[in-house]
Image 1 (cartoon, rainbow, N blue to C red):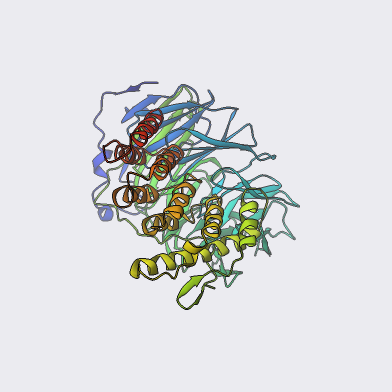
Image 2 (image 1 turned 120 degrees about the vertical axis):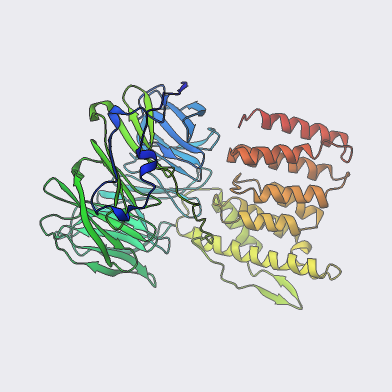
Length: 586
């Protein structure tokens, strides 16, 4: 379990490859090395054989072993935590926003927070055959040979479908958020499948142009390759699937077998004999950028592939290379004997991980980053949009959604298997959210005017806030944070603090920040109930999220109560909650 520092040998590949590649011929590696003869940058003893490729996180990575243990590490191999896992670990292990998703006993889905706490486990009732796919709002799609299911952030089953045929390939997403599934059995030699909404509704059945040999998702759609050697981009337009472009075959006898999708360009890989051939294309147009050789490597023996900051990475069981879209091969490494290896992984920090059968994980830093990485600002996307059916009368904003409907939505969210009804229910709640937010802005601009529907109907408001909190997605996190900052009504503020933490999800600490504003600007000594609710909700979020940054933020929130400004019982309650947070040991 201990990290061991090894003596460093002179590894010229660490700095040679940062120089400009223009002085080298295409297809010639800037550096070639045999990793079996080099000392690793670092190595760590795991405590068992790794049974799935390590999952990358913002702090480093995590790995699951046959000893029924999950371990989290920094980028330099320092063990952050180790937790036992119930059941037999399977080969499906991944990360999403630093949460870990592990499959055990073939059919059990486990959701683990960044601090190593197992938040929930659920038996899907079928054998999972692909890595679970996480949607844009946090919903988790799980695929079996003849089943697909969807789960919320707290483990509730949103829907489950049984397929008429065996599925092949993993779940793929389109730009509109719909999902494409592929059947194993061809239809007159052509792959067929269907497009599914995130809410379990079959949108269309699809027969493709030929038998698919490889596919990979990108921002523009799904890149596909066919048995005749051609490739194309499959996407959607006005809720119909379309083929945006086709790259005609020049290799009928050597169809593309693997695709690596980058942000703007992709690599199409095929074999010509024992030689790896690579075509790079522009994702949006299909323009052929370059075609070159990757040397001797069989795609039937492919172990790991991924896009990198500079281009693409691929490894077989005996060799690994990184290259760019123009055919410049930055480095080529010969790997140790495959009899000694379980898995190979290349991370965004340019580390090549070799998961050895002797319980050791070796890391080789293959390049140094040049310059600062660009931070791309992205607008948050959801699967739904409010109908904007907000109405007003004499300046009073009100909602057309009756109370009975809100109670129906709340009841549905607390059960399972509501399928496409979730879309309509979520849109109605988004409509209410916009309406409530509009009223709060108006009240803040004109505090002396009493034109408030939601304050004058507190039970109605409580019901819709409770319904929002049961959605088990991250759609309403920002809404709750805004409500908390703007609401002044004491009764509704109590309800908001309580409901805002029901899901526990607060990725960037927006809700916790709103709690801090309430404590600083709104909370009075007499507000004992609200103070205790703030303590409870802070703990719920910190415990669910498991992030060190939110752990520190939560401790700071609770420490704010421990002054003479607050009642003694509040100080005592905050102290007890502070102790509970300390026991999380994040």
